[in-house]
Image (cartoon, rainbow, N blue to C red; front, side):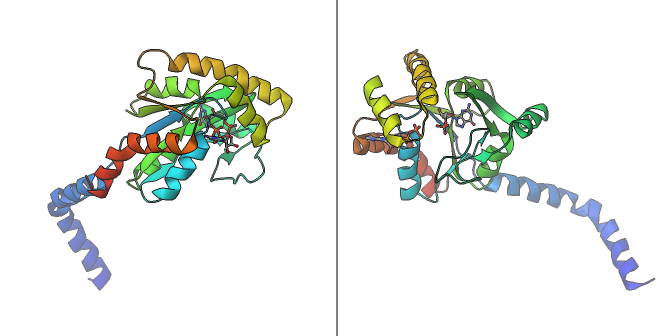
Length: 228
Ligand code: ADP
Ligand code: 5GP
């Protein structure tokens, strides 16, 4: 019997005996990376979600990761494909819906946005806390899934300030500004419903709003640092 044939023969005979060990090993590998509760952040466009998350990710780079959504919106100047969004054509987005790739998806201001199942899964496998930034329909859809997330709403001080900030960001056309402001009221009304969100952060003074966000995630950071 050749050496390699002999080795294969030995492995085949050993496999059944190794099976309990292998299945235990696979189980411990699957559970050795703790999976933390994802956090869904929502709020009118321009309320400051990206600004607040930017500060949090900068201060705690190892704790959090952002679920990068797919969108049919065109990139803004400075936005990076694969970092801010996966920018895709409408046909690709439709195909992904067809294939059941999305955890949730919605239309917002004439564009499609969606969270792929893969995006959340890949973050959870790294043991970081996954942040999802979605609009109101995304929030409602995610609540129907088994994601067991926590929900945070970022509220602008008022509609005038929201408009000023959106205009100041310099990213919207007149049409898209109007659409975004129109949908803001719906988001604010939903946030006022009992139990819609676990936390509401009013983003007036940025430092204060950021401190509130840090309080919301303080326990998560503690657990993660303790490896729980
Ligand atoms: P969102 O991600 O919710 O659409 P952004 O984070 O892009 O909102 O914020 C919209 C604009 O408002 C940005 O130009 C940002 O710099 C500005 N901004 C955010 N928070 C504040 C704040 N507390 N005070 C003043 N400007 C702010
Ligand atoms: P923007 O075009 O300003 O980046 O995003 C517009 C809106 O789309 C924001 O309210 C944001 O929260 C939401 N959004 C971004 N990604 C997703 C997503 O994957 N799903 C849903 N439902 N909304 C998203």
